Length: 382
Image (cartoon, rainbow, N blue to C red; front, side):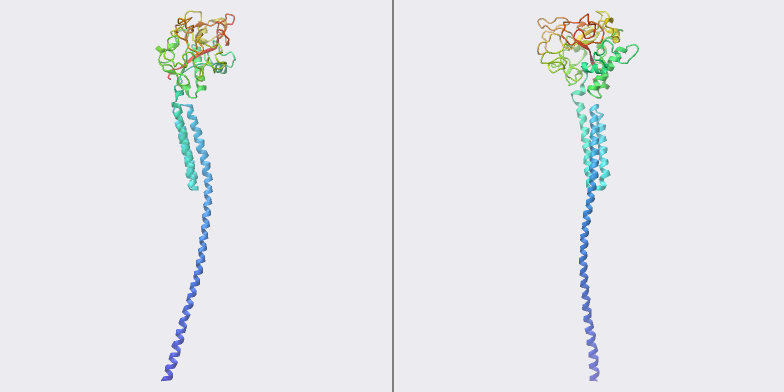
């Protein structure tokens, strides 16, 4: 019985030792080597994939589109208010930014460029300035030369491609419109009329609307027809009252005007009107309108002219005691009503900017008395 118990104990012990083999299971700890798998974190190198953000360079392309939008806003200079539409075009560039949105935040950058286009729309504010009131000017020598294609200007024929009855007046209106548009794009739509009378009768004063009228710089020329009628417009801005500006807003006669050095300026004041001092058709001479502004035959008539600046203005272009046409106003020494001053020598095209003491009968042109065939232009709807 003792021998049998001994054998049984020996077998049980052996089994226990096998249990220690279970410790080998700790070898599973080697599985911690799996931690090396954290090397997978190096996969964060994938962040370098954010290099894809370089795709935002595409967004820079949308920025260029935004700039293009602002170019559209430049078009707003052309017309009052229409430019706002151009601004919206700039906003369209922002949608181009959205195209680059796949590049992430870079796309948002493109949207910013779009908003820049909206900023361009703000340029429409410019049309609300003084130039928007532009509604009066004297045609400049340069403009008449450009449109006529002649260094002598149009002379007494102002048809400018028009035909039939009233062609001279309609052509002169077209010339006014073309010059206004050249000076300020969009202003031609205001409806411009030349201050010219013609047989019919057609009276210049009835062709120009009701006012007010301003020069290119926003200075008042006159608020009403009643204030226009006089030696000079009674309510004109002092800066232009005795030296009516051309389509640029610049002076035709004072220092700084074309051809002027100090107060040594060309004699360029004779301005075609065909009118008396009330703005009505002049009847004191033979053919004072060059046959309704349709002929350049020198001997065809003697066009009536006014003076864009008083003939004997003082050194600072002012006159005191201004009276009326002819030597006027007590001791002022000024004469030359702006609507009606004298008869030119003839209807031929021609320019004379020299002080000659009056029209020369041997030079039967619209400018022989000191001028170039200029005329006044008024916007009917200023």
